[in-house]
Image (tube, rainbow, N blue to C red):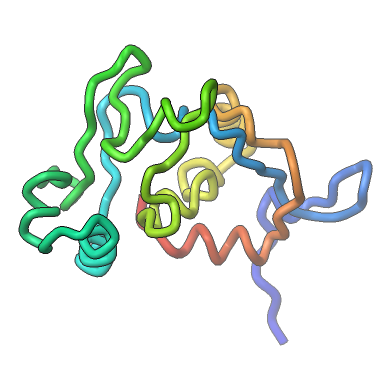
Length: 155
């Protein structure tokens, strides 16, 4: 039985002896805002979002998506925080930023912060932690789960 090569996040934590990375969303909205970017959406995700919003697929695509060099993406709107995802809601819970379509959010959103660029080296993880207060906090995500999440999106 061959074992996958060890990655930096396979190293056990000194305090617990368990391997993995910690993450817990703080609802800060930083991952959904900032400089212009892309939230890639698949055809199936667009269909689910359209159904959720009670729209025909073409209406959803016209209203909430655009073509980008990365493929179809959710649109953004400029706010005082940066370019917010069109579904980021900063009013529902005062002081928090929540996803207005959370249950049907795209895979790219579901897998944050376990994207390949963030996991390539510990310094990349620490760089992501500078804008995401949930990184290195909360429950420990085991390496096997991290690999599954990382494999789900091509970032």
